[in-house]
Image 1: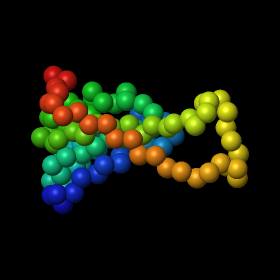
Image 2: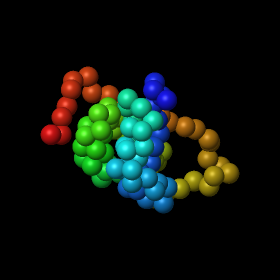
Image 3: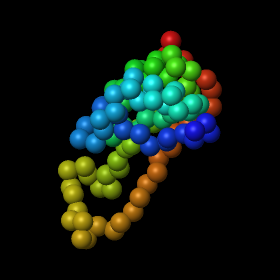
Image 4: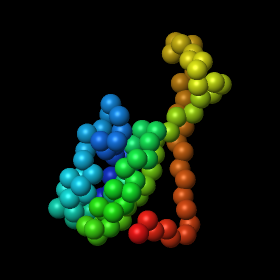
Amino acid sequence: MSGFTHLHVHTEYSLLDGMCKIEDLVGRAKELDMEALAITDHGTMYGVMEFYQAAKKHGIKPIIGCEVYLALQDRFKRASRTHARPWFCWLEIRRATRISFS
């Protein structure tokens, strides 16, 4: 399966939505000959260090992301879904230089 990269993966740190344990996830990616793998947990980056270290250990390029949410007015004001306009926002942050958590 070389050449394929999952870019939307939730781990056990993504509350109520993910159940992948990072070591198992990265190990399976290695078994499938994946060169890179991303994590995009919901609103949290608690698993970043564990993911980065596991990916590097297995020779997989770690892609670190986070699924975030934007409040249009105030995070405490929630419009009814029937009155809210449907919209989607993709937030991508890139860093041009190399970083290392070693």
